[in-house]
Length: 347
Image (cartoon, rainbow, N blue to C red):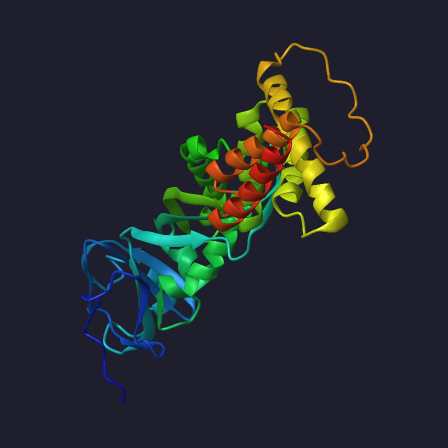
């Protein structure tokens, strides 16, 4: 004959243990007069024949038709309290399960008001607790002997990420400004997730966004946007990039012949045109009319033929070296070359 259970309790539920079923392997033999002890941080659900008969709150409970009236119809009077009946008790941990992690497993693509498109990762923490013990047992735990936060974390994480993506899309804010909206995003996600948690018997008690980080591609776009913002005008920014490309050709002429002539002309274009373009960019007011379309690329200028033109190339080299864009060896080699040319022209 199976052992008759006189006292049932779960005194040592761990911090991540959501539920424990006693007996763990299936219904045990109870009789009227058996004791169920429920700790302060617990709630117990009394089951018989797969049905939840009563919810037991903290305290010592004696199984009787007087104390637990819902079991009277299930047990029947024929036993008179003398014969055992099969039943089970499910203990649920009612404490908050804190410091639960969530995050996107893959970068998510968003439409960004400043960058056009942005690929972002997000992560944070949340906390939850049991709101409806019977629902948790019936809809989540099932017939398992024990259940922990690790077993439900993947499902909750997927649910959180889905809702958070919706919230991010609705905000219409740029990644450049998102650092100041973490509180709003956290509050919006928490409100959106309440019904989802309630549908499986849980209550979301806290939700925090720890970080929203761009991928490497988006970081490069942010750097480009920062450079454009420092210059102040998109047209001037594109001219600046074109001028930098020409300057690169001047610094790296490719050695001799036609390539060197192109480098000399490019150096002249950089030296003579950079100051004008930058001055135009910084002086242009926001209300000024849109600039005229950029002219078609002109032919490569001829090599410098005057001392002033050669001096412009030298000035360009000084600027590029001070910005760290060319190495010291390359700078010394090119400087020696153009200074010699300047001497030949009597500069």
